Image 1 (cartoon, rainbow, N blue to C red):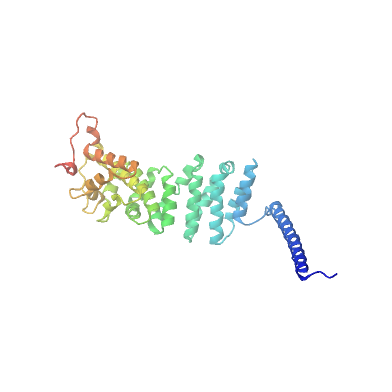
Image 2 (cartoon, rainbow, N blue to C red):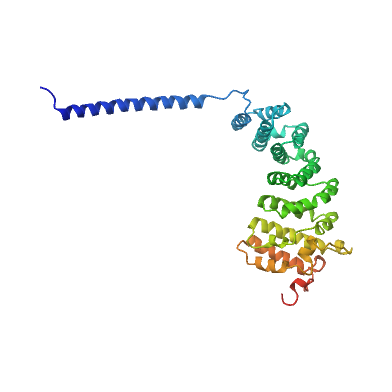
Length: 339
């Protein structure tokens, strides 16, 4: 007896489902084989890809083996490379220095000289990566003196090339090093450039610039150069409560150190003269409105900004040599007349 049409259609659907399941199972099996083969597959050790080399090095470090990949990267940097390749190699070296402590410590001062030579490259991206690599190596004590020798070159780059990423990389490196006295003459020359970066609109560069300036403000022979440096008429906008908290905190630290420095007996022993557009006049001159900005920051939402604003107010009211006295009268017109 022949089957009815609905029954035939039903069987046909079942067969299609079975075939589909079989194909699906086959596809899953093939996918599994492909993934398994991919996991087992290792790039050749002679791979020229810096990223590949760095990944292999990190994997070997996890197993407690000296991969030698940092040395291979440094050797490849000595070969003639185009700008893109040099940038990638330097980026991979930076990662290896941070992640492969033993291999990084085994490097030599010749390696630092090699990386430092990349600062003379014509391409800014290579310069930036070289600065980042030097910053990574600066975390290893034995390389610090050698990296310090690059300080003048770094200051030259920061002051002559207007590139925010380069400013950040260069200033981060300088902020991670104790700057020797022989760099001070160059610091005086680049002070206007540092002040321009501080007054730029790139927050990360501004933060790094003001950190360096705060450090330099503690040097007696540089304090006047900083205070007499010319600034824009709207410099006090840096103290507005709308600025990011990270920048506000650093600019307040800078102001406190300047205030303490100018009130020190050593500095007050000399009668200094400042130009009308100087940082000194913007912060401490008779026409300055710094007090208003500070009082507004006392109620800032971020506690560290509040505390630092109070520290600046105290430093303005009480010179260093009289702070230990029981009573301290305001020494500046900012807070006189009930202001």
